[in-house]
Image (cartoon, rainbow, N blue to C red; front, side, top):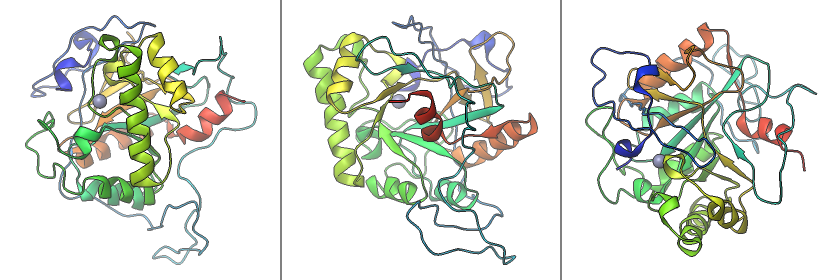
Length: 306
Ligand SMILES: [Zn+2]
C-alpha cells in the first residue's frame, strides 16, 4: 500500500538498471510537499567492523573497542555547532512542517519509515557502527497486519519481532517516532479521524517503548491544517517531511534538478527487504561526497528553539 502511493519524480531519480518497480505519481502537497518513490532493502547479513557500544544515552560504563580504546558515548551522529543552524520561523501555534534542516554544513539526516521488514542484521549495523537514524513506526507494519511492502525484494523478516524490534532499535539509540496506526491519506479524513490515527499511534509507542513521540510524519507526506491541529493535540512538536528518498541499491531519488545532496537534506528510507545492504551503499556514498550524518534531534532542537 505504501509504494503505490509514494509521490515520485522518476525523471529526476537516478537511473538504475534493474531497479524495477519504481512507482510514482506526483503529489500536489498542501504545502508543496513532494515526495519520491523510494526504497531500500535489507540483506540478511549485516554488520562490519566498529566497536560495539550500547548506544544508550543512559549508559554509564565505558565500553571499549577490541583495540582497547574507549568507544564514543552518547547519541550517535554529528551535532550542530553553536550558531550553525538558522531557526525555523514559526507562523503560529501549530507545529512547524520541516523537510530539511537550515544549515550550510555538509550534513544529512537518515529517517526510516513503516516497519514491515525487521531484519536483525540492520539493528546490529546501526548499533555497532553508531549510525544516527530516526525511525517512524506505523502500527500495521510493525505488527504485520495487511500486505507487507516487498519493494526491495522478497521479505524474510516481516513482523519478526513486532514492537520488540523497535525496542532493540531504541536500545541502540534510535528515536522511534509517530507515523500513524494504519497509514491513511490524512487529507481524506476529518479532524477526529486524524486525531485517532495520530494520538492512537503516540499512545501505542509510549506503551510499547516507554517514550511518547514528539515528531510526526504523515503518510505519503499528505497533510492539511487539521493534521497540524490534531498532531499538536497529541503532543507532536514538529511535522517531519523529507527532501529525497532512497531506492533499492542505495540510489538517491532527489527532488532537485541538480541531483546533488544538499546541506541539511533529510533522506527517507523504509524497512524493506535488503535494507542493510542498501544502507551500507548509501552511507558509503554519503561519506564519499564529504557529508556527515547528523543527529536529527539535536539539529531540530537547534532549529526550533522554544
Ligand atoms: Zn509510510
